[in-house]
Amino acid sequence: MRRLLRTAPLAAAAALLLAACGTTEPAADEAPKASAEPITLTDASGAKVELDGPAKKVVGTEWNVVEHLLSLGVEPVGVADVKGYKTWNSVVPLTNDAKDIGTRGEPSTDTIASLNPDLIVATTDLQPSVVQQLRKIAPVLEVKSADASDPVGQMLENLDLIAKATGTTEQATTLKKDFDAKLAEGAKALEEAGLKGAGIAFSDGYVVSNQVSVRPYTSGSLIGGVNERLGLKNAWKLKGDAAYGLAATDVEGLTALGKVQFAYIGNEQDAASDPFGNELKNNSVWKSLPFVKSGDVHRLDDGIWMFGGTGSMERYVDALVAALTK
Image (cartoon, rainbow, N blue to C red; front, side, top):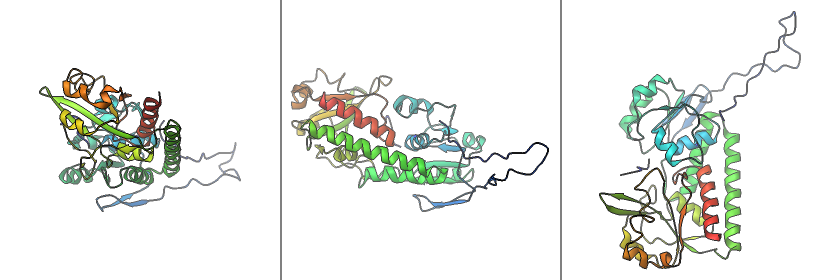
């Protein structure tokens, strides 16, 4: 399936050894250079991950962990499907020359080994057999891919775990504070616009062999969780999967929504990613939908990764609030 589900460099604190002219004695107020303390973590798989110190050379096998790394100030040396990341996530851009390590589902162990990483960050979506191979190269930190029972909480938990492994817990604290502030700002704006409790249906869609498929984001999805924290009500009645909170339907399934705000994200670089604005625009069922008739269909900005981190979700809040209150 298309888009299978599967974050400025970190400034390391380095003490400068000051040598006085004509002597090797250190300055009286100079602090001795501290050695990195070992780090021991337990990852989502229950495995113990031991590091000599904060990881600097990090590989990310999934886009959400890559966004977390970038947001924390850690430029990954290896990234799965670099082109895809740059296409779908321009909110937290990958600007360095990270090596493409292959696909998110099948990363190249040879390529990863050539990078000599301190740490490989993966998700529980990666096959255990692949993780086992990666553990022979470097320590692997697995984070839970997603959890529909607490999608926002799981995203933040993953951020914290990656921050501990990379010595960036202060950055993580700032990111979480900014994220909470953005949610509060968005919720206030929607309430002032009289939209508190309004029904919203977020979806994406795609076209395969001229067949339109619609993928509803239920309340168990990350975006669904953010919508609810904004004071909106998820209009989807379908049950999503246990991890990502995603369901499946077609254009006829949209008739169950009634009068709601309908939002989605497409991508100009993916011709099959906007059936709502293209393939369905002349469809009689689509045109008969109440939210289509009332003009309450909102295509949000490209480059917001729907399964990303705090950066993507903050931009989503801005885009959604702007669309609903214009």
